[in-house]
Length: 118
Image (cartoon, rainbow, N blue to C red; front, side, top):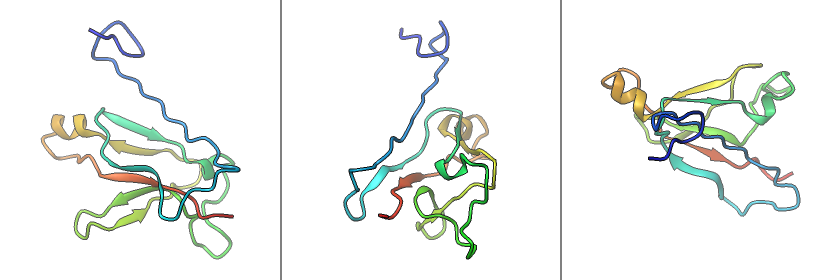
C-alpha cells in the first residue's frame, strides 16, 4: 500500500495545495480557481493570500476583498465569500470528521473563486 506523505502508515495523508500567481494569465469570465468540492481528509488549514501581510481583511469601505474561499449556504445553495479574520487560519472539517462525529461536524461544500481582474 502507498504510505502517502508523512509516514509509513497508509493512514497518514498530507496534501498541500498552492495557488500560483496569475500574473500575465488573467482568468476567463466566471472561471473558478478550484471547482466545487468537499475535502476528504480530517481537517484543512487554509491561509489566504490577503492574510499574508497580517493586516486588515477589508478595504477602507469595509468590504472584504473578492476572490478566494467561498462556501455553499446549505439552506439556499448560494456560494458566499468566506474571508478570514486578520492573522487567522480558516479550518474546514472534512468528510472523515463528518463520518467520525456522526454528522455533528459537517464537511462543507466550497470552492475557490478568482479575484477580479485588476
